[in-house]
Length: 167
Image 1 (cartoon, rainbow, N blue to C red):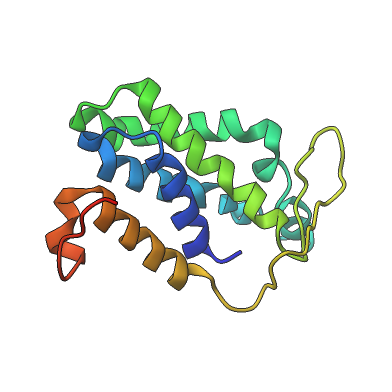
Image 2: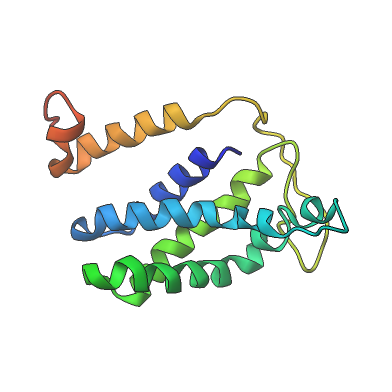
């Protein structure tokens, strides 16, 4: 899945548990935590050209690694962003964990798949629900902006031509 889609899904997941005062921060934390599992591309070797392929979509994408990956993101973002905004570490970990959790599941929707059950299984789960070409991000972003317009009064002036009233 493309990085923008990973970030958008991470943002939306984190937003579901955010209070209004931390909505923007939850969006940012979820977005970047949704991208974090792909940092496994930094695992490289000068002597083994296939090492990067072997480790991509492996432990960082595993369902069992979500609490640890979310924790790593939370530690980083708590000390760089969240603490200054008054967000507790617990909430930071929640938002980061939710964002992180979406990544492996989205990658399992592609034809390449991901090792969701690592270290217990090396099987790649490829549900083949989404082709690798193209990006669903534009429609996701449009839906996200529409949701913000309908539910968050503070965003109406910035993203919508006219305020919408809840139905």
